[in-house]
Amino acid sequence: MSKIELDKAFDVQKKKLNIFLSIKVGDKIMEDSSKGVLYIEPPSYFQSIKRWWYGENKVSTFKYLDRYFVEFVRFLDSILAIINDRNKSTISPLGYSVCKYINDMIPGIHMLKSTYPNYVELHDKIASIIITLIDFKTEYREKIKRGGDRERALSF
Image 1 (cartoon, helix red, strand yellow):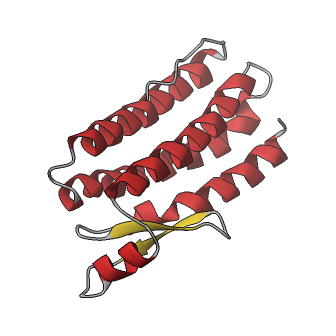
Image 2 (cartoon, rainbow, N blue to C red):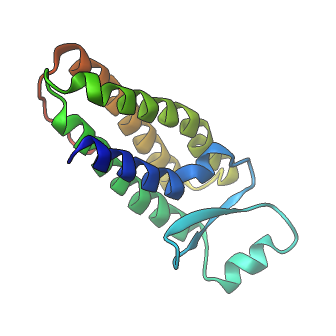
């Protein structure tokens, strides 16, 4: 994948995951399947009715996290796969932007734990997603420093 393709792929991923930059406690996640993006349903009297009407629940939230973050991690892996001594100076700005985006997104992802305080499976999913994102940042920094290759396993 070229740098231009990676930039475009990052823009696509951001459109899908930007809700995690502004999500608050009590906000629930819903999917606009026609656009392939998640959106926030804020707490209100009609939140549970709307979620029921559209067949949304905590299990669908779990599935969305799984699906959207597996796709995001594949994108992250594609960045790691192309880093070498010759191109690390051209990949570095993108990697920096991705790492910053991850930093901005993690508090929002973590916010879902407070929204679903008794859903242990979701808490475990959130923890594994956050660990995987932190692992990417660590491995990215190491690869930029040394320019070498190393395998990383998907931990969720």
